[in-house]
Length: 441
Image (cartoon, rainbow, N blue to C red; front, side, top):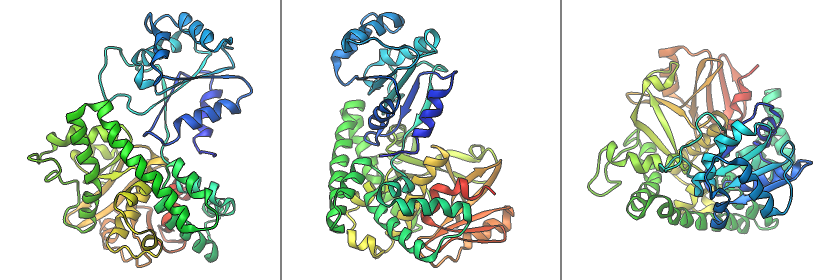
């Protein structure tokens, strides 16, 4: 399975000024797989240590400072010498061994020639007795598989077609229909690698294939809630679980226009203020299980200057998991007969793709009853992105925005094929992850 982040790993590996790498992301998005696969792609050896194995913590028995002793113990464990220039060392589940995290500072200072890549899911959530190596690590984030990564595994021809479309600025109508069909399937399968593998393993029966993916989702949702207690404690885990399960309800309220932001009432019993829910929400966001979309009052840079901490929308981090949690009928999703759910499913899909392209901090714009779902920054300009789930694309909010701010470029995502107008791009929703390339001429 090929992931887009492999190119970033290569850049890191070839950079002579690299620091130890910390690969972050939600649990089960493929961090371990991608680091092992990257290690196997190198001509040299790689050494893999998973710190869920408590015995490996003894490697740091004398602390994090003595890197020579740490390396000697790793060599003794594998009965193999480490080539300090060419080999790769992988520290997996590094959050379970705080001393290993602290050691990265000393590896950076004493062994800048070494390749050390680490994976973790809950780093930064709890304060420990060992300091974090500030300024001594490089960061990358792995998200669930994007739509184009999904296509690369599901249909190589359509994968090529979707990338050609951003270069040629045109999509053949028959290809558009095939891509739209894949988009609907992706909204059920999502981007969790195990779910994608299970889906692709069934070649004959679409319903069975989608059911395989949904079974993976059900297991993951149970595992996530069990994981909350491990890293947050029993009482906090109960609060985090309630917030996690409430995300879908919040999105439904947004789509129904009963609220245009995250509503703090009726999530936790007897608690209705931002400060009371801030902890569980930030826990989910830091863990990569939720996406916070900040609401900007003005589309001016920096967008963070025009947003408030307590004004945001909270999205599920993977569209497939969301559809499973909502228990939406798979045939209904394929036929797009899901009523009011159709709109915010499209919005969650777009958020998932944009996060992979633009990082964790996304913004929207609201003014009275007008709303632009996303604002993206390109070449120091703010581009409004409006999302429509179907082919009817009357856009009052976008018209209001354009009249008020006169943007040089605006994007409307919908079920329609790609076309360009004066200062306006009408693009199919499935191109959301490629907007970065689409707006560059």
